[in-house]
Length: 150
Image 1 (tube, one colour):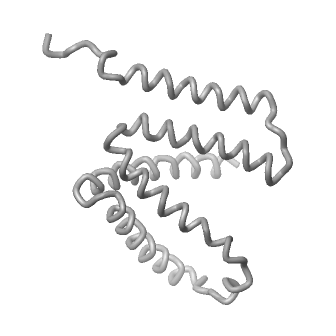
Image 2 (image 1 turned 60 degrees about the horizontal axis):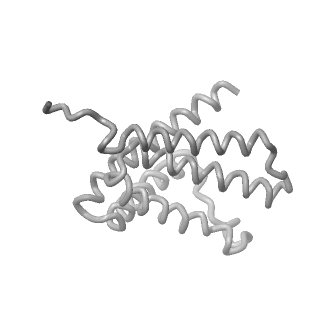
């Protein structure tokens, strides 16, 4: 179990780094071009991985409904929007807002897919994250820091 936890943390570090790199590219090339390059490099990387591990199979792809592939649309939109907002909001604010949205959608998806009604503990958890977002935004607003020049 600890290996999965560490892998998830590593994945979070990779996502944060990726957003920063795409944000820099976005300021020069625009968010949709940054997203396009992100996905082109990703396709090349995953093609190489699939070839190396020998799992280059597409026969089962036709068995799935077309809606199963909407994740690619949402993933590309996610990268494009993140590439746009990351340099404008900053790393901390952008990531906290994304995580807040993910938590809200997770509660709603669990309710829809698992018929798991939002428990008070889950609702408190989401509220605490949103309060954390508010406090972080408050502490990073331009008027909250003393002018270093004075």
